[in-house]
Image (cartoon, rainbow, N blue to C red):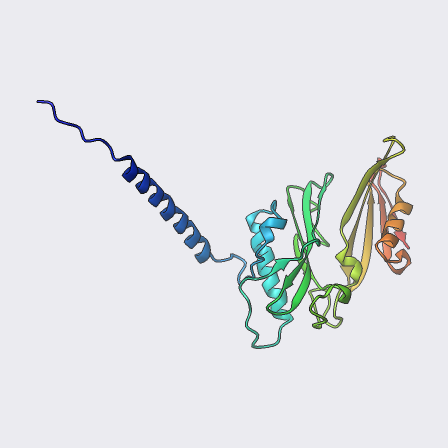
Length: 248
């Protein structure tokens, strides 16, 4: 006896598959909402992934947690701390890749409207040894007053307990300059970084192609600062044996 086979209801199968997909998506969203930042409390930067898409999750978590820490340290006792709502300021992002150190880095300004505060943020990642800013891979520092859209809030950061902000040049560094000149016959590459020792800013110029000390000094002036105001360490990395100049 031949049994009559009932046709498979394609619509029911489709609805079942769609329902399963929705459940999976909702579970993923719920898991993300319930996930705790391994570094502690955080303030989420809503558009972080839009502007810093290459940073791994570990760096992202660290940036959110460090933002909470600096906002808390600059807020009055009893302030309700936001959990999200921070945004990277449009037009403030500077991305780069250091070929020699094998690191990516991003510098930006982050605004937190709910507490009327803004900071300079820096994050670096990669497999190289140079993912630092004075030894840091994730860092927030105070902004100069000219870049504060909510006004001066008496900002203090990890580099200072008495002044309202670190020296403004720290908001411009590190940077790497690379280009070809004279119909590509001349390769120019150097970087300018900084360190802070005893609240004193020390600049370091790493010259990868040689002969760029004056160009680096001119770049510092172009940024709006006087090289004579800083101790500067110049390292000629183009030579077989690096040599160092320390001075102004």
